[in-house]
Image 1 (tube, rainbow, N blue to C red):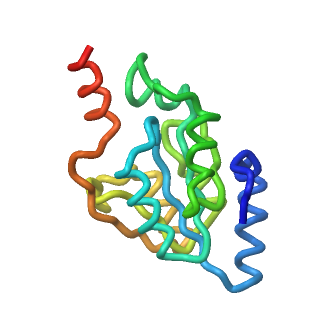
Image 2: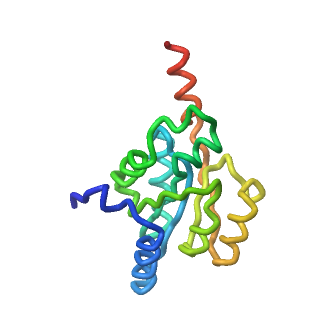
Length: 164
């Protein structure tokens, strides 16, 4: 199936409608979130493995303003629409929602996914407390996937700067 990635960039309301249609079909939703500034193999492998935990996956990504607040004034490298488009082009991703806050507890509560996945550099204790409360209240199972060493946007940016 050749799908248009632009059609998979959703509002939160559209993502919630998608979630409800999955529920009616007895299917399970996986959600993850992050900046996904420079898409790399670590992201692709992580997303592929996360998607295997359910029937569909929505990725919540930080807006440009949110990335700047978290990572500093030189980030993001790639703007929010193009980050969302690249993620939506991956077979493992069924929808992308851009969120504007530093955290996505509102989106996590609204989507009430069956599973929430983060990389192995996180633990339950390292999750944002408001996000953890939203997940717990929704009855969402929290899963962690092993971190893939050598692949991070920060490392890639540092390597690029070293070669300049």
